[in-house]
Amino acid sequence: MDNFDLALQLLPLQLWNTIYMVFVSAFFAFLLGLPLGVILTVTDKGHIREHTAINKILGTIVNIGRSFPFAILMVALIPFTRLIVGTSLGTTASIVPLTIAAAPFVARLVESSLKEIDRNILEAALVMGSTPWQIVQKVLLCEALPSIISGMTLTLVNLIGYSAMAGLVGGGGLGQVAIQYGYNRFNTTIMVLTVALLIVLVQVIQWIGNKLVQSILKKRGKLTHD
Image (cartoon, rainbow, N blue to C red; front, side):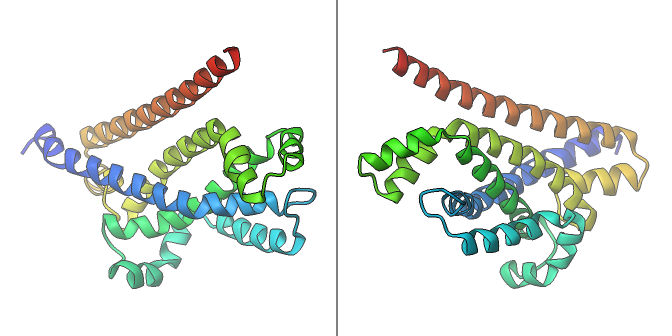
């Protein structure tokens, strides 16, 4: 079997495995990171639900989560991964450390996006009698949506890099192909094709993210103009 036949046999499935674990882990990371980012914002000093203790505790937890190199985190979470999915190997197992690695990152991105909103908008909402939940839902999240989408695009791109690292410990995906067939067997063709696919995947995700942001901003511009 020549190099191109081997590539045709391996790469389509492993490309799908990479897409699967990146998007599923991004989904769960967003489920965890979005509320964390909102809480970190609204409990900050001078915000609508200032609470120093909660803010510091959550901030410390998020900072600890972000401080772990992914390779170390992946190994440290092996017992937890086995508890959740029954194994520490394979594509599905990789979703657990990928999610936990990305969630603190998402939380900080959401927090940063929400803090960019003009305080005058918040004060106007409070004067109009809006509840904290209404402010979060209709002011904070709505106004910060383009920035949050940009942050999620960045998260997806980072997760592609993390998923390639997961291949080092049997996580599946394109990273495993690059290590097992490209690096270990000195197969330059497989290595080049794998890297090319990863680059294309990053470019496609970035393009879609940019288009979504531009679409939202364009609609808002039209509404403002009208």
